[in-house]
Image (cartoon, rainbow, N blue to C red):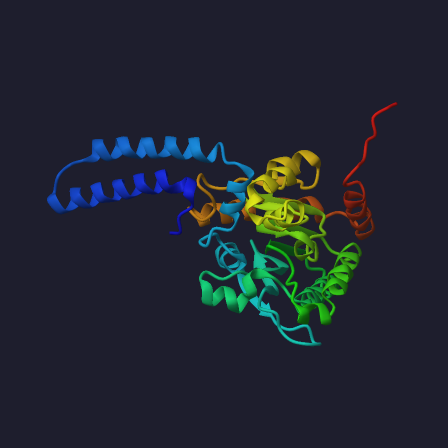
Length: 319
């Protein structure tokens, strides 16, 4: 498992416990009391460290290489997943996945970003940074979902849309803008969850929904902390300060009304107990589907528009 700086005391204690267990088995010595004491200390240490994470540390957790991806979640909580490829215009973007699946017997359409586990996979998936053809592929699934009355589940995990020359030449900004516009008119429920990184227009391109949630240690922001630091301070090393200024974590965004719910993660992050995180995600999706299933199409679209229209209120002090 990859190590984050602030996790080192936890990982060292876990290694110590593992060594004691191995020694106990090899030498046939009962060390249950000693191991139990270390495990209690480990749980206490986890609660202490993860109960006081800074915004920048939460960003680091959201980027953990072992964090569950879209395909991990589809395999853990969904059945009969069928991936649909291509935008019928240019090609198939592997950074953005679409498909059909069942969750608890209910048919749904799936759209979301996909990262890799290692360098090779990340290069293949472009680190979760989608091209215009990815967003056009997403538009196809929205149209398909509407045609067959399938709720859309959108799982976001991207630092941002790919900013390369080729992507700009093929209409990156235009494809994202069209998706944002069209998602407001999709005549079926849309449930959005930020499962890791939620950066910039790359996230918003599939981020308009009737219910919007994010995992406890994910982030959602108009720009990545490094990008913000490079613009404001001309120094990407100021990313930690930028993270604090951006107010990009679930707790802040919930208080602002940007998201509807912060989904709890296992102690230590989703990468430590993926099945627990997956079940929490499934619970939120099913609850949201139940809340939206009886709403008329007209009411659904009206409330979706109102939800985003009221974001970012400005208050001026009285003179």
